[in-house]
Length: 230
Image (cartoon, rainbow, N blue to C red; front, side, top):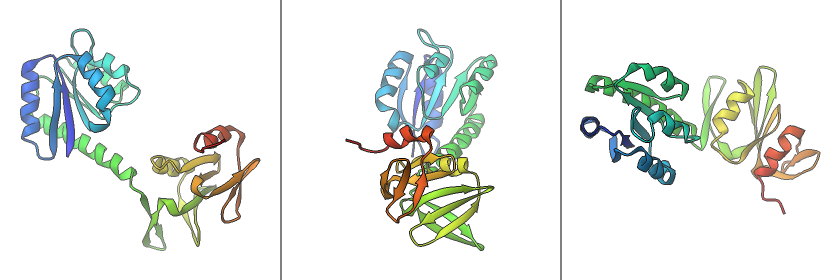
């Protein structure tokens, strides 16, 4: 279920979007706000429970753009306005989609279908396992079983306790796909380590399997921030 809120000072617009949401399977309207300041206060406390925001641009006291600028991170936003001139601003703020009033159901469906793909993609990245292709076979690998990852030219080696895999990938791509798992930390431009398997570190990082990895100076603070140190 995709939980939505509407922020729009226009009661008619809220009524239309509410009707569209209620007639669309898989979407649930949690709250609607005609006052953007009240909406901002609500989001600061409840943003974790919201998957999608329908946001008007032109509102008194605070515009939709100003509301966007007041948050470092928000769920996907569909911007709703009566003027197409705000399209550029929408893309500057990485808005998921843009609808011009009066909103038609066909365009509404097109917008939420794109947002749904975005939300599902985000959820997929937070899974606790990955699949690795090896000799034509897809192997399921639990993220917590990964000891460390090593960049090697155009390849990345994924090391487990009893075996390893070689992928055609970049370190940046691996880091992006593991970013939702707090156990993984970049310790060197060529290494990502699982803190569960770190026994000790000084100038280098020693893992529980006896392997030592280099620790880059620029990554030391990043590693320490992931650990409880007395």
